[in-house]
Image (cartoon, rainbow, N blue to C red; front, side):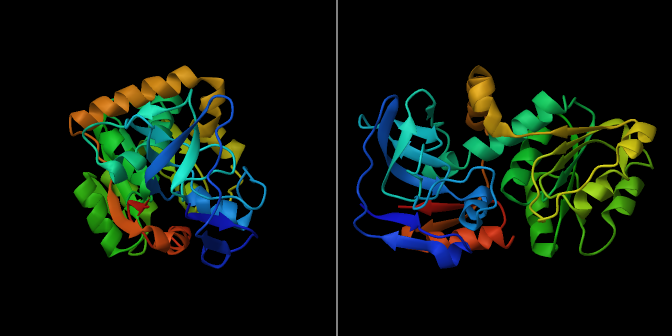
Length: 318
């Protein structure tokens, strides 16, 4: 089978190699072989190539952590491949106990992009931050893969959504997603813009997959009893929170590592998927698939996501 493999660590475009005759993986206990119909590119794919992610698969491995696949009986499923059998291949292994039906309302590429990003946004907004209707939500990287999911889920929850993006093109995408206000951080200080938009009160919830200056600025425009949910550090800078500042301003800093719920509370993950499926069937959420790439373009797709040059989701079609 055709499969991409990483045999050394480095930039995705330099270390991902297309193998034409890779062995087809053999299912073990509680595993099933699926034919990959679409594979979504995630930022962790790039971090794994660089050796900078918390999960470090042994070399060589096939990258790709999210897919829409087809079971032997023809049923479409979504989820995460297991072991070194990644999604950027014609076939992949999945845990038979962690398969989720692909919503009929979504095509293969959209279904492939529903799992990680939307689950992350759902758990961040509802499980961790307890977002309520009428509150104001600030989403960093609002035109990105996980940010776009947070925007849609924030609107579905009845929140006023402020999106922060970098550049005019991404600002246009964020507006189309439904943001009530879009702030281009390249055009001015997002902290001042948020304060002005909220009458000085600040925002109730911050969704931050960026870190660095995005986090620091968020602490300056968070409301009384606000909640900052730390999703990741796409900026490359991990901030060091000032607990004294959190104390005097009375806000919370919450961490969200969605992958832990797969082992700590798998029932909650399945319940979340059921809710996301309902929202997809109702047309309330739909993954923003900005690029559908050929299988041979996978390395370029991962590189572009790593460089922050994409909007929405990039999906590889085998």
